[in-house]
Image (cartoon, rainbow, N blue to C red):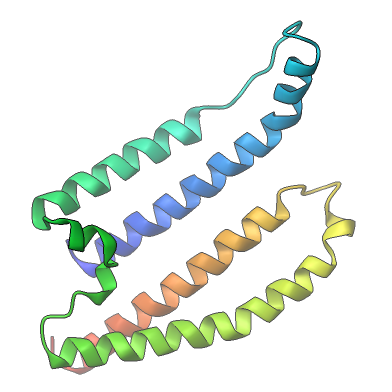
Length: 155
């Protein structure tokens, strides 16, 4: 699977995981109330994001399993499967770029969390969004840098 397709799958999985956690977070107070009142009443839980996340994850695992086999490959991220010295160098540059992106975005996220008490009534799941945005920033920085250096090296 190409790097672009893997990146799209990863970003879709990040987004669906975020949506799933937000749905669960919205349902938890109603679920707690349901169990506190000993089952009188009802609660609703949006299972659409969970189902979409499951389908997308199964598709990704299936496509990767066809290409890769063995336990070692399940533990090592896709990004660290270099074939030669050129790919190792591209991975090193992309990892550096990803680290720098996190180095600057993490303090910005910490500053944004200072305003969470003001935002909480309007956006109670703000920390979840922030964490997934940080994950996406890191992943996109890696992919863009890897792709840029891949073009420059003639691949």
